[in-house]
Length: 220
Length: 244
Ligand SMILES: Nc1ncnc2c1ncn2[C@@H]1O[C@H](COP(=O)(O)OP(=O)(O)O)[C@@H](O)[C@H]1O
Ligand SMILES: [Mg+2]
Image (cartoon, rainbow over all chains, first blue to last red; front, side, top):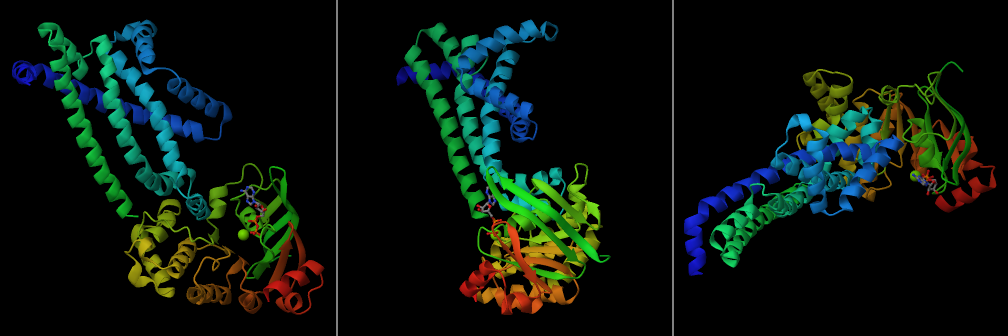
């Protein structure tokens, strides 16, 4: 305990900047993943069969392979495919995380939309709303209530998932453990500090989510 | 016939292997009130839903004012704006206030100015006794109030025709009357109506014509007096003996 405190006093700047890395990487992953996820969900639910199959394959592929493998794949592959962009390790890894998250998020969005009563589609169509307005004015606002809580859970698993970026020494919390550990050889102590930070972060988030969820169901 | 508004020609609808409509030809005249009766599962809802293309017919045609609206390039949205539909389960939009439920389509699709849409909606709400609920959310309404709301939501588009699919079947008995009286008013004011209903007394009172649909075909049709007093087809006789 004493050692942990001392370690914290000395290296808290490293851990905090690691936390900062984890936070922004997670946020960007979820934002990009959601944008991409909406697109994939629309493709998956659309009327054009080849597009639908493409979206399904995308989802299955990303859910059926380990995320670490995907990170390696993007880390090695992206710079080869787009040499002109001169991508940094961090950019490759964030792209990989976002692509991975998009598969899960697209399924969350699809499930949220499917959970809206079929009668709402019919009523919206029967008064002559265009397809776009049926979706944006009637279905999606109702689906959001199903989507937001699940998206929150996805954020939590993304936060945990970003720890894999430490394999590539991308600046985030788990990487800060590696730095401190190699400077001090206090492995268990630094792991404990990092673990506590992860836990506090996710615990707070899941409590906030619980509140949000209750808010959303009350308004029904 | 010159005053025809809607006509179906040999309408067939299959769900997979199940043949639900087996060739329905019917003509609805402007201002006419047509009741559709028949046993559950006989295809009444499917027939109604084919009329505004919520279901795409497997074969056959639907003509609205002489235009074939089942052809590929028909503008389905524009067509649906001219036909209102009311469902058994109300299907009011829970994410909008009563007023917004009504003004949504006129403002979005007819480009009615917001203030004008609001005034028209208020007048409609007044007509069905819901004016003081304008700013409530539908979850605060009773079943009967929700159904009256869904009726005025459809009327706000100034449709030329209304379809009702068992509008009172999901209501508690004490609320049936308030909804039927709104529909009755519409009928008396000259609205063209096709209504699927189990309210035989109501069908008899307001209809100009009754269609008996069973096993995906119109087994019998005629004036309410003819159908209710001296039905000919055995299945009509059997059905009426069970419900009357
Ligand atoms: N979307 C659908 N998919 C498969 N079968 C359906 C669908 N809609 C209706 N049916 C079937 O079609 C038949 C007629 O249904 P419906 O038109 O609702 O009858 P009614 O309104 O007279 O009770 C029923 O057997 C029903 O199960
Ligand atoms: Mg029915």
